[in-house]
Image (cartoon, rainbow, N blue to C red; front, side):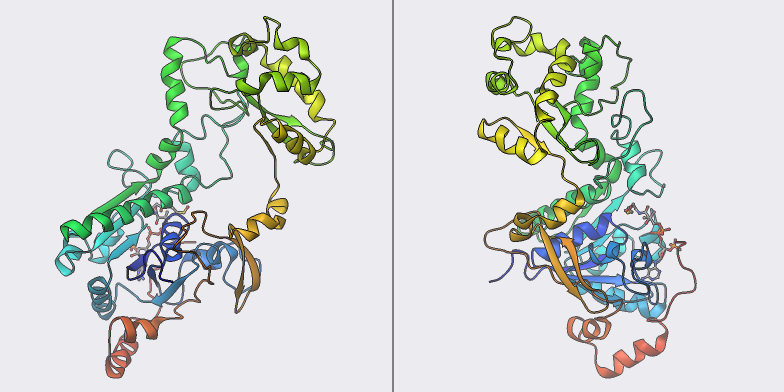
Length: 425
Ligand code: CAO
């Protein structure tokens, strides 16, 4: 069976997390992804957070499945020639270098266009045009500057970053969509184009409900926030909402049986209006179904702390999984707080390929996340990440068509040797 992106060749200049997320997705959909890495060093994540000495880290292996690796010093004159040939042979160049790096390498958009007018050049940067456009950015910087951090955490605590890599992996997703959209447009126009995705933009986009709340503040307090019921006035910016629901149906994290010793014995409980009467019956408060202080959603808003405290009395008598089962029978939206251990051991996630076990020649077997997007006619098999430069000769010969003599010349030129200047760890 062919894959959705069979025949699409990607020149992958990405590193760390944001860009590799994008090209890994494209590889899962069948694109031939050729990762260009600095000789001797490679993607810096190969050596970061290593759990096994001298073995590609899980950080790297979990972001670079289904790719091929070529090492090339793109600052070496011969290396530039090879890169020029790669640009001719590929459909898309993806990069997430620091601002200006590609230009300094001698491969500006104009130059790439002159080599291959059909090429799509896709870039992730920390910021879009503006005062910060020249800044280097990592995940938490994007979370902080995109509105996630100021709105995450407890009102009286410091701002918090989240464990979900919304700046890196979130922006990688955006870029992947931009690339396939540009590829689709190219089928009509025949032309390449630039695709750019800024991490700040991606995070802010994911924080749209907070921008919504910022505007609602002008018209009065945010009644679904706990602080409203607690009588604490709102300031002029959206406050941190702790675990209050970000939508119109109030929700909280509530303790379940075992919470005293298990840090994840909790459940997220949503008091969705259509199932309110069932909730009342379940927790032993049938009178709340008709009582004017509790019967209607608006009446409940100033009393959410009291209501959730009562519901928690019930959830504390059940494990999070028992509560989930009981609540789902009544269509009451809820979710147990699952630990990474529980997710890693979840059989259904293995069955769908959302969590996969991969074999690696130097690491052995390890767990990874698989493709979260399922296509019925383009299933994703997750294959291991490449070793550094594993496919250099294969790509020089098969993709670029170089002869034995040319390959030997490239080897002799120093283009495959480590460059002198390397980015700091
Ligand atoms: N051959 C020769 N040189 C190479 C090379 C190759 N194959 N590949 C990379 N290099 C060089 C580049 O030319 C550049 O050198 P110069 O600075 O002399 O031009 C250098 O290596 C890499 O520069 P960089 O700025 O991309 O790398 P860094 O480690 O200093 O910064 C990061 C990393 C992530 C902060 C920066 O790339 C960045 O801001 N990227 C955009 C935002 C982004 O994607 N961030 C997500 C990171 S994941 O949290």
